[in-house]
Image (cartoon, rainbow, N blue to C red; front, side, top):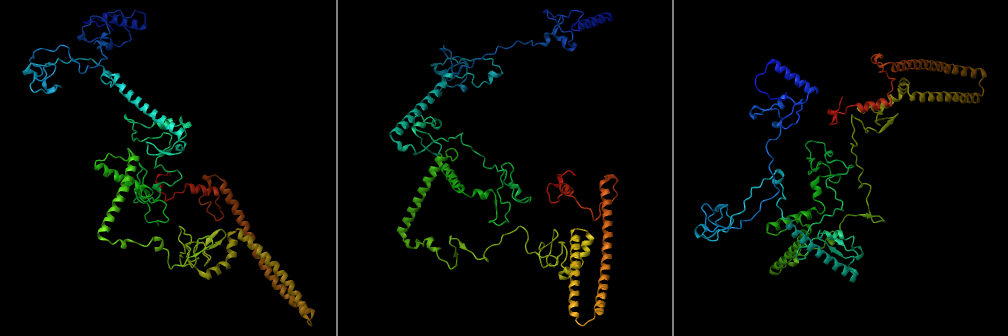
Length: 579
């Protein structure tokens, strides 16, 4: 397989070659070797082991798969900048630089000072040729930023650092000597380079002050420079991160046409609810917050820094805030002094100073005709008419459907209603006193039909009324006996007998009515048993409208399930719910 034999082969030769290759793969025959004596793996495919025809290989080999080009000898050196040959030519050579006479460049690229008359014509002061190097650099050598760097240049940085350290030690020594001799400066406020005033500490706390002293930098002449120091021990927080308990800005008003909310900076500059009373407003936008506190002072200082920079003063409020604030304070003092001087000049020339004198504000607004009564603790006492009632988010004193009372003014059996007509339906029309009388007359029938706790209370009242009638009959019988006087016992007995007959007839009618009510109760109990059987049966076997009766009571678990699965059409995210 690895043999790159050329020419035509007979069938027998080709068969023998195939058998030899199979034996080499099986390990029964020795593998093929190249010209260097190295064994060739018999499992290498033919398109890899066979060399191209243009290489003219005489025998089997894998050299065509290896790198045949020699590796270049990369160097680690760098160009010798500015180095020239020691020998300089005596005469000017043709093709050399007409300015200096060197043969390695032309006058266009000459780095010497342009001469009034070049070396080509004077043949004097001919410069030697520069050393031209042809370095072979690898990929990393071409991109090494420190290649050719002279380590001796770093000594300048070390010397500057040592000078700063020496100056810092002197300042430290002077402070410790002064603290030992003058103890009153221990708690004195000493300004630092970062623009903040810090309290000086005792000499014994010098170790703890080493960190703060290291942050101060000095110039070469020993004077302290204005730098901005960032203390890594101080915790800093991002201004726009809100507390998790606060309401998000984009939830203040869900209207799409309201104030724009930028999610990247978490800012809402405009007022999301401009129609709300400002006294009741909780959030009025970021622009409202930016106009409070020291923001106006900072804006004025920023304008001053811009104007000072345009006029040529090197001032930057972010680079040196302490310097900017100090200069701004000085500017305000000078501005006030200039205004005062200008005012004095105008008054001295034109007069009229008496017209500028005004009454003090304490006397101007000290008297009024409004009567205010104060309590013993000094607080004003307001009458009840002036006191504002607590406001509610619901509408108050709204009468609907011809009602004379508001909804919720009447309560009966866990239901709200109208006190003017005792209606328990909110959208019903008012019926007035007639509706109340009709409701009282039919209350017994309604309660008996509904079969709730009202019916039990009505039965108890009926039994109480029956006992009261029995006691009344006994008292009436006693009065008749006392008032009979000359009447015979027979007449008295006849009257009492007729009255008892009438009472007996009423009792019989009442008993019949109670019997009918018992029958109705039994029927309802049987219906409840049937409905219970329907609930306990399989859902697939339950008939249609089997739980639509009046006696069906919804359990709290079913109500909770319904509330959880109910789609609220006012919810803006209802379209994303999986139904």
